[in-house]
Length: 118
Image 1 (cartoon, rainbow, N blue to C red):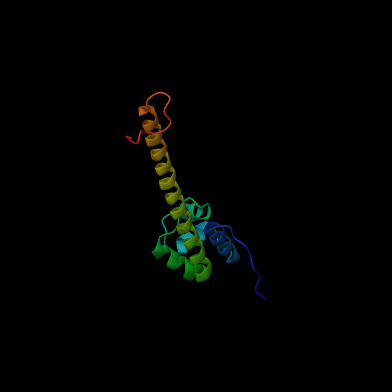
Image 2: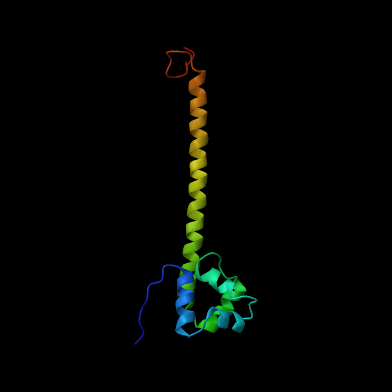
């Protein structure tokens, strides 16, 4: 019977799979020919992500589920896009507000809107 676990990020998933194989970070680093186990630690803590090449090696070494890994990577990409769009939106709103404030400063005293020239 296969149990279902919930991982909140790719790092937690990698750590759980590594531990299920009774591998230390040093063991895994050596088996996938990394110079230092610090890379594994950084992945598991979410500080960095493995390259595509290393991810392929990890998937084979740890029997990672391609659907789970893909879901994590897609979610990470989605979140990045959302953040970038939000930053662009906020920047645009700030520019618009600045322009509106500038236009208000140019109006004669007592006027609330520009003259239509009638």
